[in-house]
Structure formats: structure tokens, C-alpha cells
Amino acid sequence: MAYQLPDLPYAYDALEPHISRQTLEFHHDKHHAKYVDNFNQMSEEAGMGNKSLEEVILASWDNPDLQKLHNNAAQAWNHTFYWNCMSPNQGKPSGELADKIQSDLGGMEQFESSFKSAATGQFGSGYAWLVLDKGSLKVVNTPNAVNPIVYNQFPLLTMDVWEHAYYLDYQNGRAKYAEAFMNDLVNWDYVAQQLNYAKQPV
Ligand code: FE2
Image 1: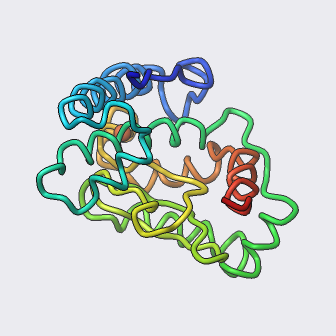
Image 2 (image 1 turned 60 degrees about the vertical axis):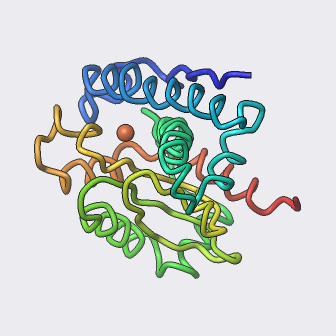
């Protein structure tokens, strides 16, 4: 069954002034939609049309013959996750998430600094992530479409640092976009949900 492009979890103008309606219209309706279309077509052609996005991401990882399928599957997944990682009502980390940020990452200030460095330090296109790795929180970045699940890391938060995510609003100012993302956009309830989900036995 073909994967459906999910709607944004908020209105196109809900993240203004930090991310504009125009950016979200292009990013969701053009870029994300194209990745989903490509995934559906390529997974069908590869005989993997009945597999989930995660299954295809893992099965196609590090396989040169399936590189394009891998990239489009990961981009379809990453964008859905990225939309959910943002909210006009960001809240704050609390409970176990706040405790782990303190114990694993040295506290909120240190985490914010590490995350922004991961975002600005990723050369070219890619993502900054907060992941759960063997029970501990880590801040990492990945190039292009790479999703940390291929390294057995569980994604809790991501920031898309491809230029299409911020160029209309910040031009080359990725650091300003990272600042806005961290200060005004992170959906902390969603991150906490992912942490709970990550801890469930499989
Ligand atoms: Fe993107």
C-alpha cells in the first residue's frame, strides 16, 4: 500500500514568524511530497512495496543498488518526524526527559549549545538529532538523508538543516534558524513521548 503524505500537524502559518507559511508550503507540499512520491514508486519497483518506511530504510542502508530508494525512504520519514518535532506551543522538558538532559548532557544550557553546534556544524545538507543510544541521550548530526536508526539510535528530536528548510526565511543564516528552532519551536511534549516510546520493550 502506498505511503500517504501526512498533513502538517498545524496550520501553514502556525510557526510564524520563525518559519514562514511560504517555507512550509514549499517544504511540505513540494519537497516532502516529492520524497513520498519517489519512495512509493521506487519501493514498488524494488519489490518492497509492502514494507514500512522503517523496514525499507534499514533494508536499503549501505546497499549501493538501493541508494536512491534509501534516500527517499529516509527523507519521507525524516520530514514527518521533523514536522512533529515542532509546535507553536513548545512547552518545556520535564520529568524523566529533563532529568536525562541533566545527567546525560550536562543540563539544558549545555544541550542547547550542543544541538545548535550540531546543526551549524553539519557541512552541507543533513540533520541535527537528539537520540537515545544504549539508554543515554546523545546529540548527533547526519549528512543528507541519513536517519540514526541505521546506527541503532532512537530519534527523539530532529532539525532539518537542508537549505530548503530555512533559506526563504534566513537566507544563509543557519545559526539564526537554529537559535529560533531551539528557543521557539521544539515540541517538548513530542520529544518526551518519543523517549517513552523508545523505552518500551520490542
Ligand atoms: Fe527538508
